[in-house]
Length: 113
Length: 113
Image (cartoon, rainbow over all chains, first blue to last red; front, side, top):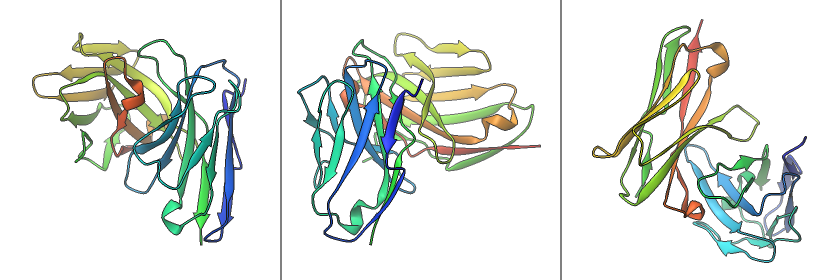
């Protein structure tokens, strides 16, 4: 029972390179989220998807795009990576019902040189 | 401006004693509050939550207290165990708007033998 799976776990990019972070969940949840966590900071929402086919911007969407491919998968793309995007990225999934907690993947540690 | 504040970056507690982690919030629209626990190299995991209609919620060794007038909540862990050593995040969102969830910066709890 994997829950939320993120790939890759680690990645190093050069400035200007592009990259897609993958996230898949097997819990049949409708809502999915992408967060970034920086040292000394809480989790900040990049984008979320309330259901298949819909996406919305969160607190820090600049420099990112997302795609909700189907109910299971929600990918995050960096078109032209910048050093400021060095971070740990977490994907989460949640049931649609109100006041339900999010279930997180184990993160992707991304370094931009 | 931080809407969810965890003012103690770290806390050390003797094994067997009570651990108290604090969280303050500024947004009076916040209606639901959660605590997540995070181990290194893993994603956050949901621990316990409380709705604004309650002032206490208990789950085993974990109790969350909410003081709405003071805009303050706390997590009590009794008794503290070595496996409780982790980073704890407080989070909050307005009624039915979990897309607006805001996380605190976290408190690192060290349980001393």
